Amino acid sequence: MRPANLKTKIFLDGGDPDETKTLIKLLGFLDGQTTNPTLISKNPEAKKRIETGNKFSEDEIIRFYQKTVREISSLIPEGSVSVEVYADAYTNAETMLRQGKEMFSWIPNAHIKFPCSAEGLRAAEQAVKGGMRINMTLCFSQEQAAAVYAATRSAKKGDVFVSPFIGRLDDRNENGMDLIRNILKMYARGDGHVEVLTASVRKPDHLLYALKLGSDIITAPYPILKEWGEKGLPLPGDKYVYDAGALKPIFYKAVDLSRHWQVYDLTHDLTAGGMEKFSGDWNALIRKS
Ligand code: G3P
Image 1 (tube, rainbow, N blue to C red):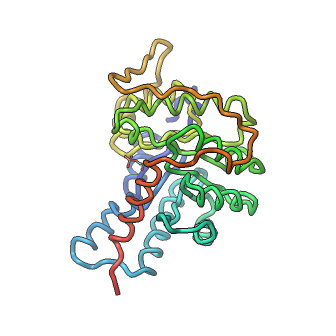
Image 2: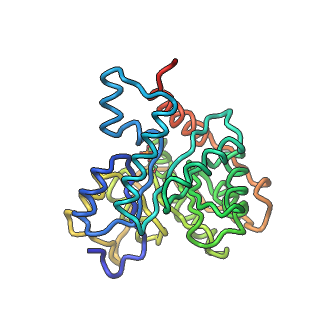
């Protein structure tokens, strides 16, 4: 059962509906799910096809993604399911938007993921004007989060998520959890229309500290949520302190949220690297004809 004092929404980060089913039984609730091209490439059915040399055609992989998110959506009809567009370094906003519109029609509870790149932000600005719910992925800086806020001013609360990837910052010895704290602090001065979705969670302490900080949403992989469920869904107490060890702090910057989104610095090597990895994992599923 969902703990009465749990305010944060809990999402599963994964591409396998069987995990969704098992986790709902274990936790007694689930508020949503996030998918991405890498997670879809790890889906057991997709992996089996690749292992047996039976790659997908362009049409088949889209249908497979659609089938997978439809199954997930039917398991959490009241929740949100994030579906990610294909975006490499050369994909323009129009192409992202076209894919996003198509994906948004697959299920009634989709949030469409666009990257926190200039073209991704351009697509996001148009998407929210057309009433699409979105999740801005591969966020690694406060400036990118400020741009998400500024590009989506017309949206209502719940329609826009921003996903800072904390584990990938930790991987390079920067304290990813500082970014969550900084974005929440910056957004506290705004109108609350963007929800912070803590992503790239790698360990139970990421989950606990994001709960303590009051992240609106946390998405975590199956093993982390399974462990949390088996421990009885513990919440951080008043005395909880996150131990960042030797990770380098990321300091808060006073960023003005009232500017045009194009003014903010959107460049981050981890955003570019993340897009390359996502598109590479997706392309590896497709046979060359
Ligand atoms: O939700 C984002 C997540 O899937 C990325 O996680 O572990 O690949 O950094 P990771």
